[in-house]
Length: 280
Image (cartoon, rainbow, N blue to C red; front, side, top):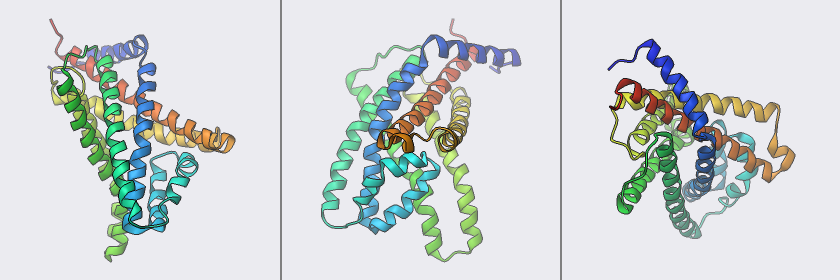
């Protein structure tokens, strides 16, 4: 069933009202906390892996590419010491990678469970899945998110260096440098669509009912990241004012804004489905 222009206006009004009435900002704060809890071991795995493969200088060179994704001030202050640990190579990196992977899986499971609970809240659903089904699905989505994150980080950090070392024409390197952002955006949209379709305790909606929310959320992600980065750089430099605590605060606010956009996209999807196929 197609949605009319009047229906689109009704969707927007109900999305705004639902976001206000259900207190999405509280759920977003919980998701942001667990996202931060997962982000630290994720970067630790990345740093140790680059330390094993290329040494500390390689880590510093490639991690600087993430400054275009994460708030740069938070990266420099919060993860500078973590990057310094990768200056030396040796057998101890193997144990560090194994320990970081275990912590990453454990924290990722809790982070995905928090996101699934928040999406149930956004979709007006009650969790009825059993323990094994719920945690199995959470682990599956968790591993999928790790693969997607590794792919995106690889495109952003390793891709430019591999093209430079391959001896290709500089034109191809410039094309990849620009074209990697639409590719990353497409990966984010696909991952959000899968998450919106599988994570809530909800009968699987049609893909077109989760598509608009995924596209709008991915767009808001990019806009929010750019605006917040400019705000931190030009107006409120928390890292410079409060040191390490300010870097943590910067990263937490950024994760909170991203989590809120994800839940807002879920509400938009739910209201779109409600308008397109009302439940009798």
